[in-house]
Amino acid sequence: MISSKAHAILDYLVGVLLIAAPWILGFADNTAATIVPVALGASTILYSLVTNYEYSIARILTFNVHLIIDFMAGVLLIVSPWLFGFSDHVYLPHVIVGIAEIGAVLMTKKTTNVVRT
Image (cartoon, rainbow, N blue to C red; front, top):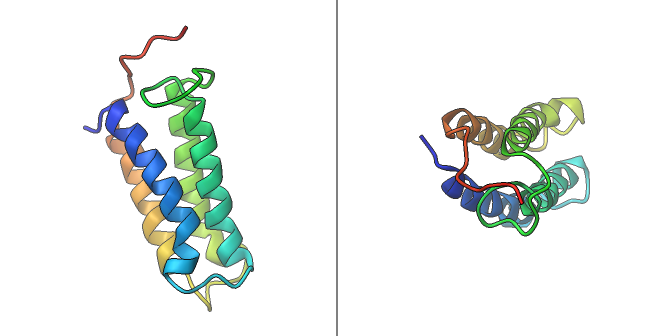
């Protein structure tokens, strides 16, 4: 099982990876293929900063709600190449990271040692 502390670290790493992926992997063409991971990466960092777990700055969002958002973001990443019509250009990075994100949610211990203040 992944602890909430490890999950917090993964959230920030995945957020940065999603933002950088279009340029690292060569599909930064300012289409949906670029916008989807950048937007999801930025939002992952933002909602991680306000989640009730380690390494956040405000404890507004419950950890379970955070995990639901992570799961939905993973699903959106997986289907985005076909939903937004760029699967003929690029799809594998979106699918791989989406599956990894869902896997992380499923393997994460659903409780945290951080108390809401």
